[in-house]
Image (cartoon, rainbow, N blue to C red; front, top):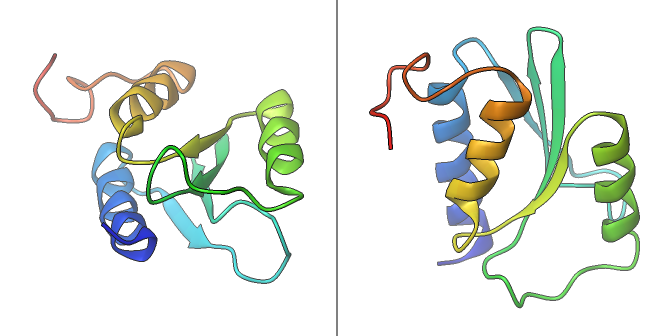
Length: 104
């Protein structure tokens, strides 16, 4: 799957998991994570990759780690998507039941 296809599906899933969330694609700062997710008092930065072994740009690890220190930041790709979404739900105090999805 291409990164932009993965990213589009991820945006839709984030909006379903976090009703009312604002999800923005970041395209202006070199190396800044692809998505900003705002939900209630929470925020996250997610850097989308088409696969786990995809290359990272020079500043991407810095921005993801900085976001994670401040709130929530992750590299996300198909192989770890569910794990990252679960971590995000846990960090934001929600669960799949609270979001209308089936429990695991």
